[in-house]
Image 1 (cartoon, helix red, strand yellow):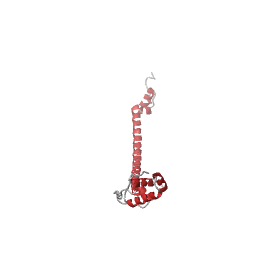
Image 2 (cartoon, helix red, strand yellow):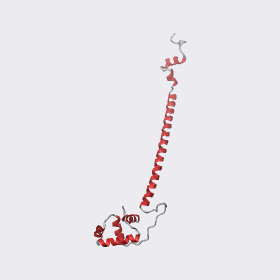
Image 3 (tube, helix red, strand yellow):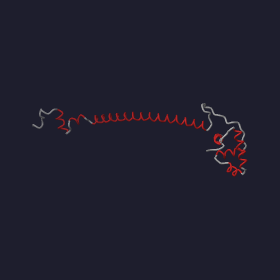
Image 4 (cartoon, one colour):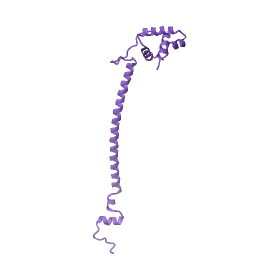
Length: 162
C-alpha cells in the first residue's frame, strides 16, 4: 500500500519523471518545441546565408560594372588606334574618297598581310618596280603615308583581315 501513494516529499515533476522514465527537462522539450527551436536555428542560418549572398552579389556587380567600363574603353581605344574614330569624338571618320583598281586592291591586300615587294611581284607575276608603282599610287590616292596606315585602311575596309 505504501507503494501506491507517493511520498509527500516528491514534487509533481519528479513524480511524473518516475512514471515516464523521462527527466523534467526532457518533458519541457516536447517534439513540437524541439522542432520549433530547430526551425528557428534554420531560419537564422538562412538569414545569415542570404546576407552573405547579397554581399557577394554586390561585390560581383561592382566587379562586372568595372570590367564592362574597361571593355568599353578598350574597344574605343582600339577603334581610335585602327583609325575608325577621330580622337575626342564618337563619329566615324569617312575613308578618303579613292578609286582603287583591282590590281591596286590586290597589292594593298598583300601589303596588309605583310608581304614584301619581291614576294608580291612573284605572286602576281609582275616586276618589283611595278609593285612599287602600285604602292605609291595607292598611298597617293588614299592620302596615306606609311605601311601601318595602309594596313589599317585595308583591315577597316575589309580588303584584308588580320
